[in-house]
Length: 245
Length: 253
Image 1: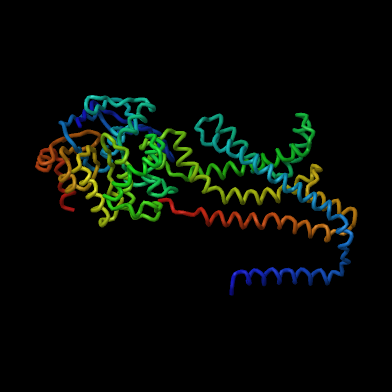
Image 2: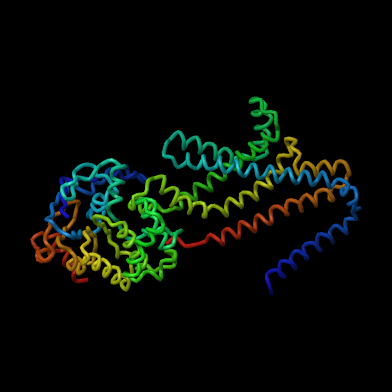
């Protein structure tokens, strides 16, 4: 059986099961009410896309800096980065957003919740990026640095010509996967009243009292973003696979 | 070349592990040797005796704890930047992991020429063209190291060291990681390079090959050189018990 057919059958079966379940619940579908708010939902979706992209770019920078600090060999830098990573990875994003916005941002005088939201999301994702980058850099055998030294490369040349080209190829799939997580985690920004996709759906629901008709498109909207990204991550993994000689 | 090593000491910090305290390992213990005016020096000896450590110092990769090394009367520098400039003038081949896996063999060959020696790409390609053909590696130039056999990888590594026109080569057990079939092709290439007049210091376990290409042989054990002799004489030197047992072991296997 061809792979695409198998996927179609599974998705169809799943959809049929869900439809059957709802048919028994005797739910009165009211798609018309939600359709009136399609503009609002679309806008929310676009804000989610923008926030996710901004947070991805910033978290790459944050993660990169943290990874360098972790491998720097200097106790203070390593400790600072390690504390950051463990704190962020050990607490829920929700808690970080609540404390970060209502306590820290207010104290610092940062009122723009969009900027604060992107920063907080970037700090969250950056901790995971740091571990991804550290793993990628550590995966390059020391013997290759030696080989670079032997032919007379400077440290900067070794980094640019030997280490980074390989490390980037190694971590690209994981970074793409992190983008998928970012898109989903951005839904939590709704708790600090950022008008992204999830908050838009919540508001539509409160206007129309049509819960399923608000939240099912919400799930679909995220899938539209995450499925291609997951496919990209898998393709990148395939494309950049080569054995280390 | 003329090599003079005076009172070389190399110590390493050994980190403490699971109850064992950290300590210092002395791998080269006031090692001295003085060769004549020779083309090739071969270092032999038991594992852990200090051959590779000595070679790395001679190749400018590591700085000794103390002592002096001079080639042709020129002492080796001790700061990293001067050592890097020294490393540009010599070639080093390791047991394995010489080539960069994300580049093709050709790109591996061109990289030092372009980025360290300032050739433009056309000049670099011209420089490697003839050696590639001479050593029958041209057809493999477009392949990545993962697609090459161990012997081909080592031969490309030797070529990469050669095309920068080094003063001398350093080879650290270039065939030890290879299957027996591939050892021959690499040893043949080294012999060819020797015949063309290259100077090198070779660390090897291949005693028959050592006898074939060496001008002088140094026996390195316990961080010192108990015996340094012209190749022909070396195998008759039975006076040192360590040399005797080493030769018995290696020549009868």
